[in-house]
Image (tube, rainbow, N blue to C red; front, side):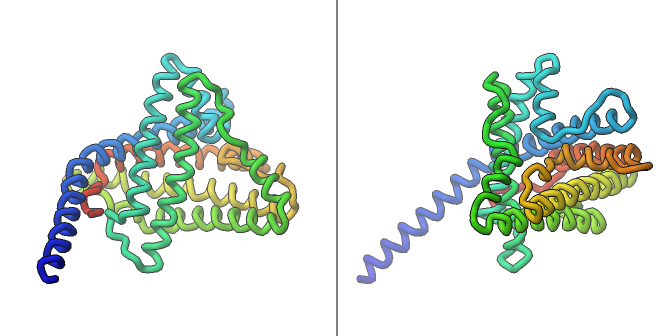
Length: 291
């Protein structure tokens, strides 16, 4: 019996060693894809912010969301090739978010806050998987009709018994995410994941203050989008739903200071995109710690 237990224990150790070795071999690829993913996400937000800024100053831009940004990239010279790179990057981002959700490489822990973060990572992975599939579909010349629009999904849920409660809950959740991002911006939560010790004070300050502004601007857009979704639930009207682009348009529609509000948020989205490039360069990414 003792011999059998010893053999079982040895097999378990061997299995653990193989898993650890596999993690070490895979981790460089996971890290590269994660960094490429952050850069791809940053590119999308920068284009979105620039378009909104041009709309704010009346220079021919427009307010749009991620899918609309993909169409703008597609229409540029070598647009499909660039969009293909964005799609690959977003798939890398999905992979990293999935690792964060399942294996906790950042050591967020199993407390209430850690679990909430990991649920958020899982939700982010699902959302960006949709964006990655949409970008890939457009890059391959298959159009941008992958999946249904937010209005169609909302209408389907509202048609269910008590479906408005689901929609209201999702809307409230998006508002909560936006408010948490504003909280993160105030406390510069992103800094604890970055390796900024080797940077000069000036560059460090640009990343911190620009990052705070960018995260706060993104949070404001999320709060607006979630508010419209919550309103759609209360009114049982899917036409009230607005994407990120629609939320930016809502800022533009405000009397007196609409252009100024949109301009500030647009600059903030560009700042968020630049922060993602900084994250791609300086974030601590150690997937091997997941094992």
